[in-house]
Length: 278
Ligand code: RRO
Image (cartoon, rainbow, N blue to C red; front, side, top):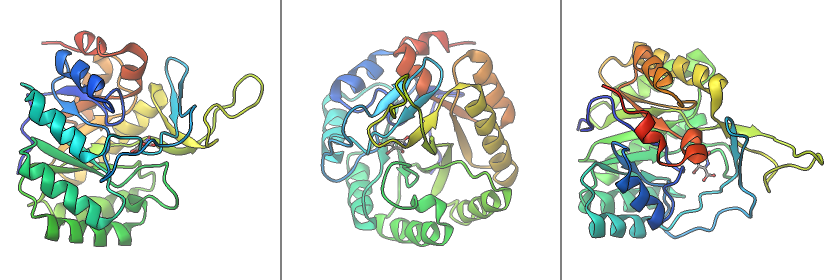
């Protein structure tokens, strides 16, 4: 099923000012074209110890660790508020079974779309979407058992190896009856930022990095390569989108919509006023 968003939508990236009910209220009142939740699990999670986020105004690092209210609270917020813009649930269950349970409940609640996140950089071991055999198996199971009937997409990690990217594109193409969009991309895993006393700035030392012109170049490359392989799928650019020119670059590379992450963290929801254009 096709994603139904206003043409060239601009909205928040999962994880950025979308974790609490107050965050969702603010997104609802903002000029964002849609509301995407923090990636949710079956049960609420407090995530990693603080500090788990840092930015220097341009680049960010996080080791959030999937802090979230639990899927039921996001669906409850949706039920209570009925926003007059699309509501997208980001799903990051800790097992195939959890993902199936959450996706089924989200469909029952008539969310507008589901973005499945199998690319969190801050959990133990290899993110599923980097282990392509495992990714293939997990997608088969989720699609088979979750009975997908709302617009459904994948939040992908950065694939620097073009052969790997093409293999992922093929996996998506084979499931194009179910997967209608992809979001390129999650943060870059396992960076380090030290403070002025040479201490790691986030509690787990390593974290996912995002924001800024370098990230934007990487993301434009991901969008461009996936667009060549997947002419009919919706592609959402996410990473280093700060100005209208960045967003126009994303359309040029082949994106349909854009998500804003670090710049939303830095500037707050007012960034969506600035990113409106005709
Ligand atoms: O919660 C996180 O640590 C996190 C997630 Br789920 C994700 O997908 N990307 C990220 O940078 N952080």
